[in-house]
Image 1 (cartoon, helix red, strand yellow):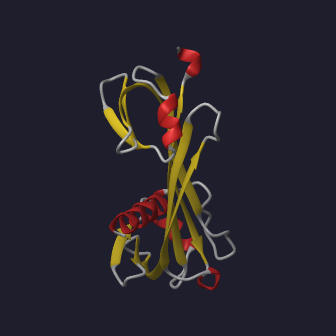
Image 2 (cartoon, one colour; image 1 turned 180 degrees about the vertical axis):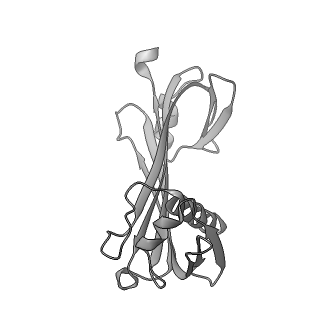
Length: 191
């Protein structure tokens, strides 16, 4: 829950400092901003624990990560020394909404997908955290906005460009969605 609140506030800061898509005047569309990154990684399987159903992968720079393997049959198909390819994706999106479009809150969704029997061992895990806060005050003179989270916590944030505040009103909502995903597969082509 603490991470969701941090992500919500981080996102609100991005929203309030973004200038693209923000226009002045009451007829402007509600603000929206986002950012993301994709990292491709390669490594090798350095340990397999069949009892704990885990695989340890060591990356090219020596960093290790131990992953849970849900299907014990996949452990039989993996050997120490096997090359692995992974892709880590992270994104943050922020949307301002009218109060009638929702209510403050936090939701967390998690998914886990694995390869089918007989396929190259692989898996993907993802997590999406969405937090919604209410704008309780806008100070155009100071260039700040105050957000109230779903548990009543408040934070006042300074906008990089105070003109962006003309697109939102007291009572509007700020929705922040933080998404992470990790896809890992044996890299049979690298053998």
